[in-house]
Image (cartoon, rainbow, N blue to C red; front, side):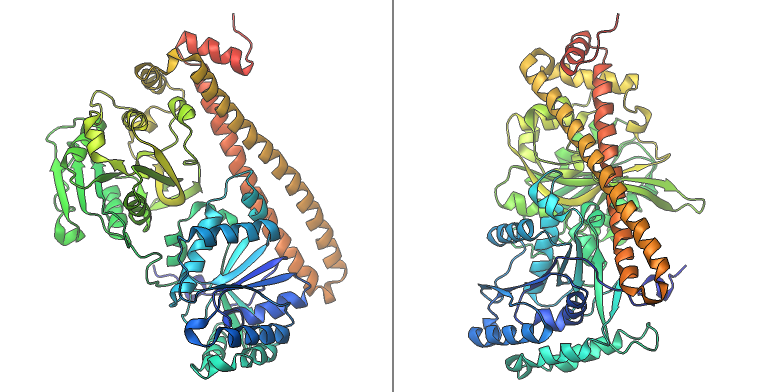
Length: 601
């Protein structure tokens, strides 16, 4: 069924709330043309608003003139003087490390609760660059870090200037529009070049189409919270807002081969291949290895996929490892990316990994989210939950204890992998970890802090890991086999370091969950007080209602953060318990003594 209009665009106005507020304008005038009405509203509500103009605007006028106009426009909005970073107009790039460092320092110092910035669906490359750079910065935060602490409740609201975005919030700015027009008129040099006021006014009027009759002007925004940023790729975020000219130019990105393992799951294979077709940077070649299941020749035809695809079909099943090895041997690119048929690539997956390979990174890897899915009665897949539980900086000693890099996250150097023997076809579990451990001994793994793929757990999908859950005899036997073959159990110092790293990670997650519990209790208490006050002064309660809605949003965000941290603490505790219960006597006794478990008689 087609979704209704109300699922695609708001039919009632809302408000942007929060303080402090950071406004990022790639050029002098974007802050007025894109979000002037919201700025006036936020200032009227008592918010602290700070504006930063990143470039000098010199590509379309005199830089000094544009600075003077920006100062006058800010005064007319009632805004303090903006900061001018005076970068060259049309020079902004999403991978600019210096600009990223400068923005990171600003966010840590200012700790904004709301960031206003251009949409990634914008036309101007500077606008798109700022959008992607800020999103990637927010996604790169780690629990306990300075940037994470500063942005743990920060929402991003993107605005439109030169391209229409798909909004999830429409803000009634009818009362503020006269002030906005006055501020826009301050940019006289720009109005001589393009009819910005007519365009801005026309867009604001058109945004009233779905709103009540009393709304005469509205601004459009797409707002996401930290939960969304943590579990969605930049490409998904951009795609939700409308067509874009690509998040990043492929530039020097290397082309990578993709190997897909499949067996008797054509419905899942179809989705996996669709995710490869949707890549912003196309694969060099796709190799599908059908491990003895029903033929997928029709599904893998070039007419069906439009991909440069090679299909290898085994007459009988040879196992996961043999399928992976066959794909590795068929590949011809310098690096290979593996995608099991039940997993998904987000559109920027090959682009991000390909750029890293082009920079000379031998073994780059990214973050994945873990998606839990189930089959509906109608035969469709429905997502139950989405968590970010993989990735993180590479820890060599911890990596020998437990694998935190799903195979689909990495670009595997093909020639080196073949020199090391490739996948061990005698292994049915942890064949990926086994190869990665051998690679780690010869090559440096480099972490790219971006979410670009999804490791899916699907009820009833028949995957081998579901048949050998954590703590099961099969899983423990496979785990101990990896430890034995890589000599991990023979090095007490290395073992102690790895186990204590795991204990420390568990304790950090548990402590952070406790802090979130306290924040949640405080927020709920404040919310109850606001609701009581709101009931008392219902007739004049608009400011209180807005504050109440803002607090409810924060409660949801704290609850989500707490639940995620609790899940991570439980996962790490489960790993420790599983390792402690290992049948390897020496390891069991060593770890029990190390982490303080009493010795069982």
